[in-house]
Image 1 (cartoon, rainbow, N blue to C red):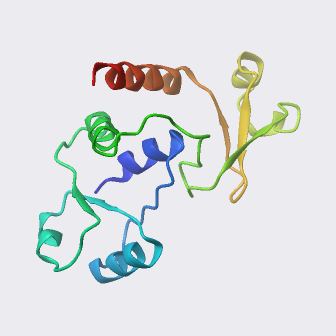
Image 2 (image 1 turned 180 degrees about the vertical axis):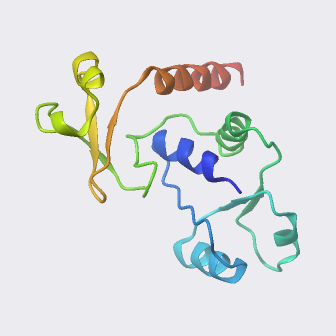
Length: 143
């Protein structure tokens, strides 16, 4: 339901768990055990008693959802990126090491590369992420 939102929050450095197929009971238990906030568009969870860490995301647009979340929680800074796939922490990596793991044109155009500690996925600072961060900064400055 909020997979794209989860990916963007992770890329912005926010610790974000996302499970495509999880029961409501398991989701609630996980959130309570780890002291996490549940983000959802599923309003029936509002009926669960004593569930305090729940936020209903109103927008259907992923960019607007990100703005909604960072505004609600008053996020001032973004941490180092996290893996969009598994939420693992990204570490900088020398481009020579990942030469065979990225397209050739990316290898020649980019200088900063990151690899997930957990799954090994490789990332680079592409123009889409730069524009997205700039847009979010502009939104934060309007508040």
